[in-house]
Image (cartoon, rainbow, N blue to C red; front, side, top):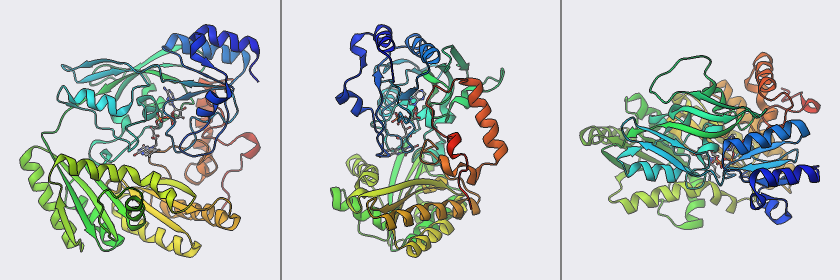
Length: 467
Ligand SMILES: Cc1cc2nc3c(=O)[nH]c(=O)nc-3n(C[C@H](O)[C@H](O)[C@H](O)COP(=O)(O)OP(=O)(O)OC[C@H]3O[C@@H](n4cnc5c(N)ncnc54)[C@H](O)[C@@H]3O)c2cc1C
């Protein structure tokens, strides 16, 4: 429990209006996209690293948890105050400090929404590629802390590939600067990379130097329609083996198509599966790539491959793609949303295996996602209130993870471990790897006050997954 002295001090640090203790406000910061709420005891809205440093120093001396939070769109519970304490929201740290058009670098605060940064840099003919499907809401701080990917990762990589340097506040309150503002830099250990993907457990990111690219000259958006999922999955690996790396290569199965259309009628055709593909670059290269993509899709029994004719059609197709995740809940009240990755050539085996698991467990499993980089969002649909179905859903997840690892994949490509995957960590990582990670956490955060209860199971539940 936070003492009255701590509450008063929090108000003094961030200002009376920027610390809230009311139940109504706390409720708004008690959830993320996992839909499993935990109430914080306070929420604060600092404006800079100095305020955050003071909060963390007090958290150390008084022993209360602090949980960094961007927009709360996380899918693994990373921003949830599972042990109570203070939610530290970056909502008021929303400045794009600089867009350096000579050096192609942007300096931003962590609360900047991804879409806002993209729109802003595009005004100068530049391009910030990381594009989580949540980009209209999620923040740069949240993207860095989760190392978010997105449809464009197939060609452009993930958030990690665009972070040059960071300003961050350590859990003990020191403000550090990591990395460089230059294209290269190798001085000392790479603390930037350690903080990226650390899920708000090693430091609070307060500024980021981000690498920008020139905006591609042209983009073509293609919609390939398939009678079944297998053909679409084969086309994904076929396109890559044809040595074409499209800017995006999204796979959408029939369950997802039906859900979106029932929910919003956004123009996806009724089909066994579709691929939403984009090729970008100079006009001639895009033309050649589009032709190869069309050929490979038709060779894999696509019934049609069409290019979007104008920007409105492109916008609608992406709106439909972004609507899949929320619309799935229209068919079943609950879902377990996993984001496994396999080597791209193994996509057909993964899809086939998931269909077998769904059949064996008597469950509906919707698959969609960034298939071009091997990342499939596997949504196990069920009803929490039906205990038999809930157990079958959990078992199905374990089977999907086993299959993924057998195919040399990983159990999370973007969503992170948080609380939802902590118990499965030992399926992928060895005891030695987990141990060194715990020791790193201890060096950064000896009192365990920053985002406790995440990634690693607590001492009471150290057993993890048992085969
Ligand atoms: C519909 C939908 C689609 C999505 N699509 C994608 C996708 O395509 N790709 C993808 O990768 N993810 C996707 N996600 C997941 C999510 O949007 C990303 O993980 C995103 O990066 C989270 O950003 P956020 O600002 O909402 O962070 P939050 O959810 O608020 O926090 C996420 C984690 O980051 C930490 N954190 C936040 N800010 C900071 C900071 N300043 N310093 C240190 N730690 C911090 C938090 O403590 C927490 O652990 C999707 C989510 C939804 C709901």
